[in-house]
Image (cartoon, rainbow, N blue to C red):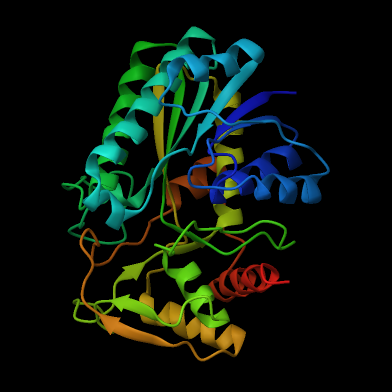
Length: 338
């Protein structure tokens, strides 16, 4: 049984991926300093899988502290690296925090991966690396534009760091550029738990619908899109999670070292913010209290994926549609007040 280190394992996508890894026969160790997440998700993972997950409460910007994980577990064969700050707006306000946290942690992990022979490295990247693309849908060959935010810049730099490292060392790297993960596990045992005011659309919708927020704001309705609001590719978090398992299996099977491959993870459907709100209202039966506000710094106008490469190479397909994304997100939100 292969042992995988998942960084940011208590986070939203990390927790769902741990579940998927366990269900596909992997042993998992988590590291999460809980600055942006809660150990509550570990209880949900145990409820779904019956497995208790060890989580190291360690800051990955400390290399010495991070190394202790590899000393304790010399048999780690792969790393899935989620741990990063990810709020676009906050990154514009606090760029140095983002560069320090997101890049130093990555460098330390790659140094330790080469030192301790953890040969399979999956990097959590983002569609933000494309900036404002000239044409959509974007493919893995689409030229990267200047990032629209420091967060996006850290993902571009992170990709370069992984690519350079895999070329220089016996590592197999995979960069997963995912679009907008939403929803919750169908068991409703784990889901998105933003700390403070949510930065992402769907938790802002569900928190407004349940009354945690008095109203939500749509950031701009004057973009050159079909209804004036931004277009994104919303994808269920369980579909994203399963893609990480498939990517790891693909890397282990092919055993291509000094090699790095890129995959887009999106549904291939562009949905506007206002269409997402309408889908939620249909599923929940709740009329959402929202207002149109000004554009938000760092936001791009429109982006969605061409996912042909992941479908062909990884055998990956999306199992959840937009209504199921919204339904599980709403069920999760309601479960938090019980």
